[in-house]
Image 1: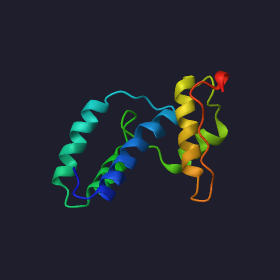
Image 2: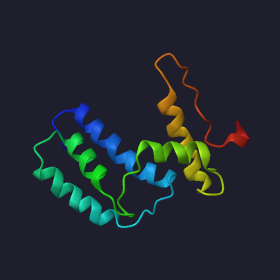
Image 3: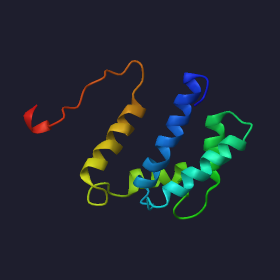
Image 4: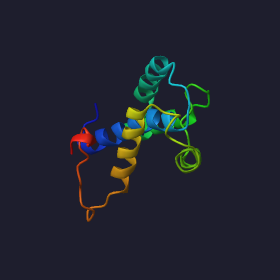
Length: 120
């Protein structure tokens, strides 16, 4: 675990981004166990800050089961492909919540989304 909370938060952001980008861009979610073992070894060998080492390792993976989708792929999937019918509804909700959270600024009002909208 990194020494500083800020660095740890950066690592978590990269690690969260990886499966979310793969989900949105329709990449398979198999072989993560091997990838994560290799990632840990690479980070341990790296002299870079942990978040940078994680991002660099994931960014250079090119295989179908390990590729880190780049921004242009993500934007294409979000704005040109339908989310509904392609991704399970519970996953669509998480994607939309994450996009909404990323779009918020300090001046934006935070409105809670009810757990069950039918009873709101």
